[in-house]
Length: 411
Image 1: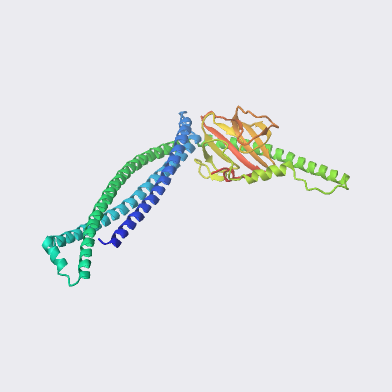
Image 2: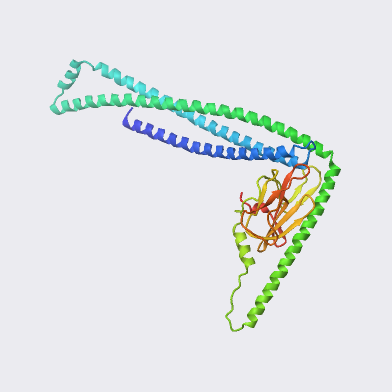
């Protein structure tokens, strides 16, 4: 093998090592995603266990099951992605092994030819004959130099064979380790698919049970609508008061400026304007008010059991664990603490300038009306209802307009 071929081999090995590093990065990323999902699964399992404690099947149990199934499907997709990545790696590894085996064969063939040629001229008499048959002294020196270079080339060829053999052995060991990892993932995928099948069987059972309770579900839905109407009226009254107060303060400032005509006009920035601007500036950055998962999103959605029924949601429902702490997502004023019918229970309303955040379904509230709160300050605990379900109903509003809370909370 000439020097150029050796250089080419070195570059090839370096490039393949780089490809392996890139693949490893992707693998690490997939493993981090899988780990995060497994952590979410553990939390949902706790919520589901609490929701399943009662013998009677509930909507809360169904929403927890739906969330758990979604997480299971995400986990299986993550495992499939790892397997596909390993498939690509193994294909590349096999190509590398084949290329190395071909290189090794060529190196050995070339070395054999060099050894054979050297053996033919191995006798001292032959070497001397070659040297002294030179027609000039310069030609003698050239032949001597050639013999030295030929000896060095054989040494380089032998070293190249050794190095390629080492690389080949390393590559074979690496490939075998990846095959073992792939088999583990395949076994894991099969196990998680079995878990998914069991979850879906349980889901179908809960749905069938709830379908038999259609009349009760419709009554519960009507009760919830009445409670929502009470909450809406409460928020509307508060906002009307705030608007009236803002207009009154504006008139007072205008009157004060009129009385003091000689003073230079000043631009007044109210505390409400500053609070609104600060709240808006933190959009997509607010921490979640409680841990758990969103069991009902903002806007209109189909009822999970009742066919043809849609639910209009002006916020989100976060299903969580028993006794979970609820926190203020941003600094503000406690504008109201109200006791409402289930499922709202105790409701805390915070004002942040033109914005309001509403936390319903609380117990053991630790703040008071009129109190200023800081970002992520505890407000109370989530109330667990008679069916063993713990839910926080959370809203974000600008004046009276409901906004999608998930557009404001950190992803």
